[in-house]
Every structure is written in structure tokens, then in C-alpha cells.
Image (tube, rainbow, N blue to C red; front, side, top):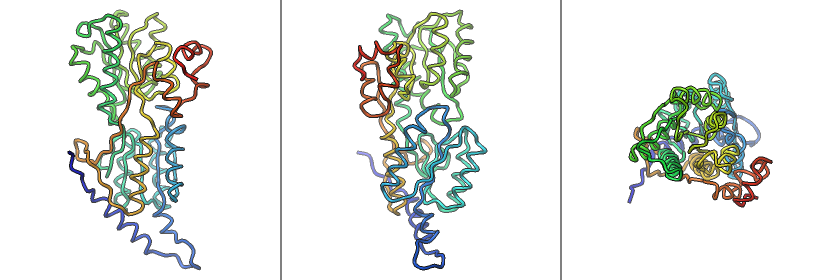
Length: 353
């Protein structure tokens, strides 16, 4: 049995709320500015490019959770700009925050977390780790990688290929994102155990177009021969698949996020599987933790990152063509978006409706 860890940050969060509540504007019994600030959850999303989830799934889920609990949610998107990230944070902090929920973008959240904590505001690193955050809420990122690696092994087995002699290219994520290493390490652990060594491993990025370019160069260096491609997410996988299509190749390809494009590629057999991270589960875990802090409670967390940060890890699942309908049923994608003309036959075959 794991021993629960009592997190001291909740104590200073509660103290901050009491201190704020004690400050008052003069007036006829209305809510004070300080109290209002203490009831605000400040959230910064990273962009709209690395994944469509941030705006279509995370924003509405977090907003609903906070407002249903009676708190104000200030949710903004940095749009892939570290300067804008800092500006948004300054604006939010000037109005006051009872808690900050930050999705890091290229390290921009580190300075924001330090500044917030200097004001007694607890920081939850959401989905991506942030050095010095009080908590980390994400999916089990090494497990994500392990599932991706397993999908590559499954694909090679189905193709009758020996993993130990297969030519496999590794296409990782941007190393500035702390999750990228965990995805890589989890995948490599599974694949290396089966004898796989990367034949080519370009620099990691979170960009479909750059992934296409990088993979094309890797494929050229390999003389056009590849047996499988480990890819860290669906967006990058889509880029890789354009190059495979261009060269008339169909090999096992991994991914994650269960994006519409990823699910389409899975149904079409161009991507072996995608790791499904049901956003509602992650948003629920983060919002419950944040609401607990806003209420001045003392949350307990029984898992830690290597650096000691309390870590709430949500379990991901692997989705092949037979499981795509599950994503639709859960509301994380719609059949109308997935089942375009090119994919209609596959949707009918696998019961996506």
C-alpha cells in the first residue's frame, strides 16, 4: 500500500486565502476585491497547434468544473508565444489568483510559477511538468510511451517482422516539453526489450510539418527502407504518414491524443494505434485538486515525480480501430468529424457512428 503524502502547500494556500479574506475594500457589504481574487482559478493553456485538445476539450472541461463549484475561471491561451505567456500571467496575477493551473510552453511557466509562489499562490503543473511546481497532474506519461512502444511491436508482429532486425525510426517530441522524455523513455523501454534500436532519430519537435521534413530526411538516409516509425503524438504522426504515402509505404506508426486526424489514420490502417488520454479525466483530477486548494483544504497525493513533486497520474489506454467508437461515445470526438468521405467505409466496418 502506498503511503499518502500530506502536502504542506495546502497550508500556505489556506493561509493565503485567510489573509486575502482579511483585506477589505470599504463599501456597503459587497464582496471584497481580495475575496474575489482568492476565488479565482487562473489557467494558462499553451497554444492551439501542438494539439487541438487545449481549446476544444480542456478549456470547456476546466471552465465548467470551476464555475459549477462557484469559483471564477480565468482561462487564457498563450498561442505558442512565450512572451505572451508571461504577459497573460502578469495580467492574471495583477487581478489576483487563488491557484494557478499552468500548461507549460517551452519553459515559460517556470518563471510564472516562481512569481506566483512568491505571492503565496500554489501552482499546479497541468499535463506538462514544471520545475518547482507544487503539484503535477497529468496522464502516466511513461505508460503513454510504453503503450506506443507496444503498438509498434504489435504492428511488426502483424507484418511478420522480427523487432530485433527491424529498421525503426524514432520521431520524438520537443525536448523542451518535460513529457517528451517520459514518452520516449517509456516507448524505448518496451521496444529495446524486444531488441529494437533506432535506425534514425531526428531532433524532437511538436510540429507536423517539421516532423514530415525530418522523417523524409531520415528515410532518405536509410535508402527508403523503414519497417516502423515510433512517433510521439498524432500530429507528428500525420506528418510522417504524408511521407510514407508519398513513397507508397505503409508501416506501423504510433501516436497519442486520439485526435480526429489520428483516429482517421488508425481507421485507415495508416497508424497502428493512438494512445487515448480522456481529457475529461485529467481535467477532473486537476480541477478537483485546484478547488480543494481554493477551499483551503489539505489535499493528499501518493505519487511523486523523480524530483519529489506530488504527482496525480491518470491512466491512458491504447485505441486501435476497434476502439475508436469508445472515443466518440465519451464525447472526445464526433463521428461526423471522423467519418469523412475517405473514411466512411472504415467507419462502417468498425461501427463508428
